[in-house]
Image (cartoon, rainbow, N blue to C red; front, side, top):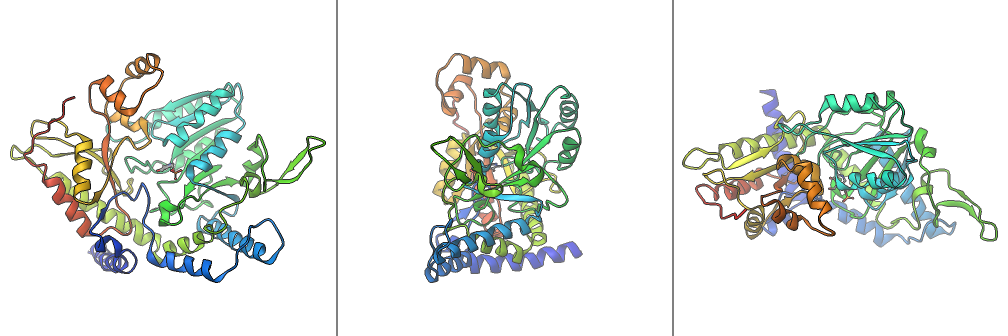
Length: 459
Ligand SMILES: Cc1ncc(COP(=O)(O)O)c(C=O)c1O
């Protein structure tokens, strides 16, 4: 009963928030269900930020003139805000262009060498998968830990085995997402300490996790963490950060220098000294006009509070999953096939599924997206830059992939579909703080239009 009261209070709170901050959704009659792609910015954040830009004279940082110092001060405030938000006093906050920019620094600078091992989970964004190329180029090895087909959780036994059997390796990096950008599953964060105790460095991709779940870096201490701010509060795009534990800062070896990253460079003698803090990795001029909006964006999230946000997301997901299961064809076959665990204690606000006709034949995801577009519903289809999950859901074998890659010089997702002769991909929806029950009801009504309809999919 108490739980129910909390949910009712949240309903009023979030309906008010929608009116105050996100009324443009209703004014334009949009159903936005792509919060994992990008969050929506609250109106007040824009107002505060544009007011700040209008009233201040802001110069390029890295100087002592008054306008430059003002920019430096606001950028520094934003950096301190990020550190306090994640309780990360033992970390450097390096501003990047997005989470991929943060991951790029790790890929480029982690000291991979001949006997290095890069261990990563099959559930990973391509911006983490891509780090394997740096490892390979330096002669290191990489290995994937599989995920469980039934519920898309990590295969604990395999992780344990791989972490334990790397004694001969030097510079071992383990990378996984705190939350899957595809299934929404929140992976077990206990692997961080376990891996560290066994001599591994740990990269936690927190891009899909932090928008709706608190991350306290005094309690769990990965070595490197990647984040994109637009995924938390929508504005600005083009800013993320890499949090680097101070103990591992010098382990990252920057292979070049750029403006803003050095204390001193000479050209008549090829010498240089890199900056000894976050500046080492912030190439050139940081986005000093937008970075100060991070302070207000994080304040906005703190004012709502993670207790409310996490509860709200659970509440919305419980309704969504329940309602989707209830949609049946006349012959009682399900219309919706959800992938992955539905346990909301381990799941954020992201759901992937396919739609089936009454013979169990898939509807084309392109057709579904097209129909959603016509109904002003923003969802996403494809493999969401996470091929591991897609290969598992659609049972694509290593042999099939090897044949495809070894017989072609070029290819694409669609080319692969024709090659395999069967469907790949899924439909993804994700909810956020601006989502209302009205949005979900419109979406459910849309899915009901597939009841007793026939799929015309050729493959
Ligand atoms: C888990 C995860 N990692 C990394 C990224 C890459 O983020 P960005 O495109 O902002 O660099 C995303 C984006 O969706 C993500 O969800």
